[in-house]
Length: 246
Ligand code: ADP
Ligand code: MG
Image 1 (cartoon, rainbow, N blue to C red):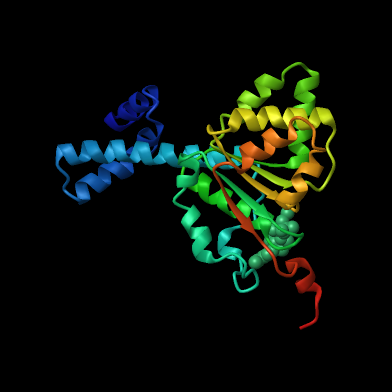
Image 2: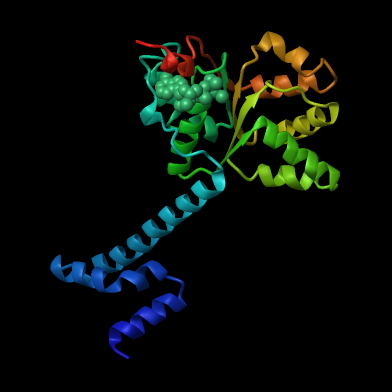
């Protein structure tokens, strides 16, 4: 075996796969740049760390369930004027996640709530956060299934591993008392511990009725709204506008 092959095998054995994989190139860069031994040592470590970070982000992206194709870059603020680009950009330092705050987008159908929630979710993934996107319907089903298996607590703990949970379209379909209770358990676990982005067509005045004013209604609403950034979106449906002749 050549010295190169031996070194590669050794790096792989040490699980430093990125270095092992790119050793020829890294050595060439060191030679071309006349790097000192110390700088070369840095170069190797940096290469491994950078590769691991991007592999991790790619893994988070796949696990996020975030739909592709909806990005903030494609959001048109000339159409949606009830929120500004600046307001959205302010969220992208992700202090809201670090501070365990929530974001709530409220508004009628088609005004871009889901698009914004997904777009922010993608940016959070790119910044290294673990994000999970679920429609409220899927989430409720997911919890219901876990509850039937006697694994509600376990499932909620799995969901609480994500830094940010995007819950899309709460309020469109009614929920059973059990579903409301399960959701309460989730929200209670996440409260002041993880962040939620919620999109809903229901204004706060309608939330009580949506949760049937039962004993979990107020605690759920309380916990979601406390420490939250609320954006009331209005305007015309983007879907309808696209179907209108100019
Ligand atoms: P909502 O969740 O408020 O019902 P969506 O975010 O699903 O609305 O938006 C409906 C459709 O219109 C989606 O395809 C979305 O990408 C698009 N859309 C809505 N608002 C905008 C906007 N301001 N710029 C670009 N696309 C938009
Ligand atoms: Mg939506």
